[in-house]
Each structure stands twice: as structure tokens, then as C-alpha cells.
Length: 396
Image (cartoon, rainbow, N blue to C red; front, side):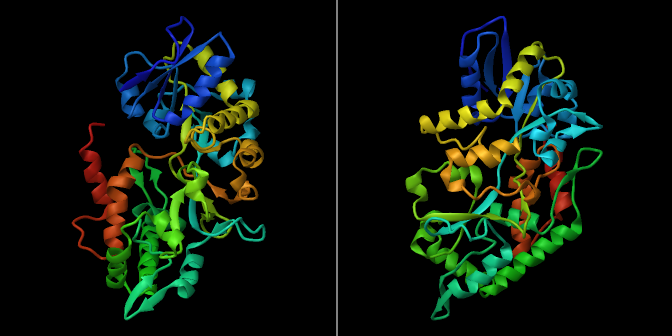
């Protein structure tokens, strides 16, 4: 744990626990703008566990791992505050709904990110679609791929080069985890099998696993972004927060499109939420901070401040704003590369509230398991058993 005090102790202090360093600019601006309340930041790696064990609760929690049922139940309902201070219609409706339960609003979404595919290219042609599908990547590979002496010297892309891409590819095939009544993750087996089958078919497009691995061993030792620039591969995968926080020099000569199906982009599951824990000592101060955070002017100032300081931070709290007007109208002002690139709200599909530990489970269990399954490596357990075994090894 690292405690980062922005100001000295105060009787009107508002204690904020977070696992999102990108919230710092918002806190600094708020503290500098008024003298009634002072927000003090405390960084916690596992917010849910910290809340369960805390004798003294914080006044606010902002994080990416607090939307599961057990953690959300530790928050105070925000319905009355919203009716008094916020415009419900200012939020992306489905994203706001992911923070609700049993007809009450326990969490408010702050920011989200999108998956993207980048490629070599100059300024975007306004007639070019803003989205690219897995099928289009596969079809374009047919003209890009180059084989010499029975070995590939150029390959557009492969689903097994990046576990994170393979997982997002699975999500485009319909894979979606939900939280069961007992808190465990659950999903439709048909969607899982469909995604694995499609990834295997993609491998066959360029000769199967053996040819793919030969190309990897020969060429894929440099960063993906450099391989794209040199034309060794056609595409690279990234997330909006990482790619758009790169310097202009790092992104020079590259263009991008959102990764998804036609008119459907699945937002990444790592959504940033904010809640007010039950037992908060300064609820009034917490609500004043939230009322300030969810204004167009403050979110515009957050982006302007980060860019002025050349901070490696994208958007609001490291992502697109949960307020659709900010994302559609203000974000492109500060990030010109997004001019004409903001997807319509109807295209955005937001994840449901995530089960406890889900993002860690994805990295440590789901992605490796799916990768082994796609390349048909031996497995000791099915995915459900693998996840259950991992959960049994956790302290909570």
C-alpha cells in the first residue's frame, strides 16, 4: 500500500481509495478549485479485500474491481444523489445499468476503453469505416500474406500471437462472463466453443500452427508496432487507453480502427466505477466530489490538464467518459486523431457487472486455457474446472 497525500490533514478530509492512478488529475483539480473539502488518495491493489477488512471505511472508492455483487453491496445507494445532482440521461444507458442491482444504483461508471487494431497508414480517409471485423482481417490477409520457398515472409495477423487479442476475438464470437447467484463466473458453452473453432479456422488460412510458429520464431522478436511499420505484419492489437496515450512520434505513420463485429463494438471489461461505501464518514464531501467529477466542464479540464502536462494519460480516468456528450463532443477536441472515430452509442456494447477476481482470472486462467485449446495442446481440466480450482486457492 502506498499513501499519497495531496494536502495536509483536514477535518473536512474525504478519503478516496483507488486502484486507478489515472484519477489523480481529477483529484488535483478538485482540491485546487475549492476549500470546503479535501480529497486524500490512498492506493489499494485489491479494493474489494481492503473494504472487507477495513475497520474504518473510506468515503469514496474508484476502481476496476468493485462491480461484483458482494463488493457492490458494501456501497450506499446513490439514487437520491443522482436525482438531486446528476442527469441520468447524460450517461451511456447500458453502462450506467451495469452499476445497478435490485433496482438501486450502487455504482456509477466513470470511464471505459475499446479494443482496436492498428496498421500502417496516413491520415484517415473520412469514407473509411471506423471499425474492422475479424473476417475483414482474415480476408485482407489473403492479399498481404507472402510465401517464399514454402515459408511465410509476411503474415497479416494471427489469433495466437497475442492472448489478449484472442480473448477479445472470443468476445466477438459471443463469449461473455456473468456472475452467478453464488458469485462464481458463468458463460454459455456454445459461445466458447464457437470462438475456439473460429480461431482454429483462422490458423488454417495460412497453413496451420506449424507454419504460424515458424513465422513467429523467425520474425516476431521485435515489438508489434515496429513489425507493422516495416510491413512484416499488417496489423497489431491494442487498447484505446494504451494506444492513444502513446506520443505522436510513437504513433507516426499508423492508423487504426475499432475491433468488433459489424455495428457492434464490445467495450473492454475493465470499466472504472465509483461508489460510496456504507459507513463513509464524509458522505457529503464524497457527493460534492462526485457532483463535480460528472460535469462536462470538469472532465474537459481533466483532459486539457493532462495534455498540457504531457502526461501519459488518455481521456478521463484513463479512458472514454461514461458521459456520452463528453466522449462524442469533447474527447475529439483534445485528441484530434479521434475526429470522426467516435462510435455511435448504439454500436457500443458494455459488459455486465464482473464476477469477483474476473480480470485476474482472464489473465491467469482464461487466456492461457483458450490459447492451449486453439493450438490443440493437452489440457488437464476444462475451463470451468480450471476457474473453480483457481478460485479455491484465493483467500476470498
